[in-house]
Amino acid sequence: MKLRVYFRPGIPVALLGGVAAAAWCAFVALGPGWRLVALPFALFYSVLFAIGLWCLWRIVRLERPMRWDTPQRLLILSPHEDDCTIGAGGVGARNARLGGATRIAYLAPDETPGMAEVRARESVAAWRLAGVASLRGLLSSARYRLKWAQLLLSHPEQQVCAAAMRNGFMTLMIGLSGVPEADELMPFLQDAYHLWGGQGYYMSSPPRHPLKRLVAEGTLRLGGLVALNWLLKQTRRQGPNPQPLAGYDPPRTDSDNADVAAIRSVE
Image (cartoon, rainbow, N blue to C red; front, side, top):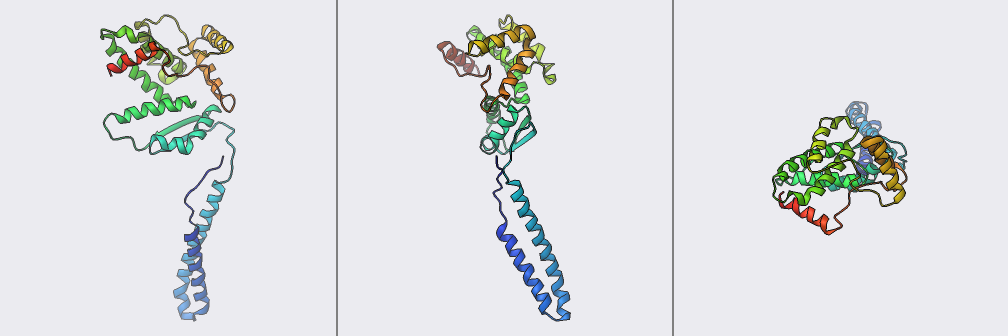
């Protein structure tokens, strides 16, 4: 990996060097009375020239190739959702797979009414697919689903999306298990899961490989949600392109599409 600095003050630094050299030449060529006038200018531009050289040296040092092989605490600051993906998406995903803490902050949200929340949910889902699970995003998603779960209970066709609601709550409970910040939400998620007909714990999106599915189901039965969440995190860290045991999949069947349409009709 190589960091890139796009601002290169080479020409300004060269001009400062030329002015400093001219000031020193004037200091040497002029008589004793004028040297006191030329000396402050020579010293001033010499200091600026030295600072400019130091800046150029720092740019060269920053742009050197480097390896990101150890987990770090990484904060990505981005004006908009697409900027950080273009500029630091690979670094964020790499650091998360190594076990580091990756946090993303968007500085200029969309000012269109309602679009800021939509863009936030989209960015959280995109980073989650890349292996960067945002705790704040998971907590927001849990509160959002709890809100709509209450609203949809009174809908006359609420059974149409019951399976989708159970899968959503199951996914959230797995992702938030063992997280201290989610201790207050977990009882509400469990109550809502049972209220929508949930019985027992399962993987909302099980792996297709039989051996992986067996390992995941065994971990869930023996260790519960916390053990399964730990196992899923470990699989995301293995290899350059890890294949997680479970994740989010788009609708594949007519039943899935019907669930999506039912949820969207009341949003």
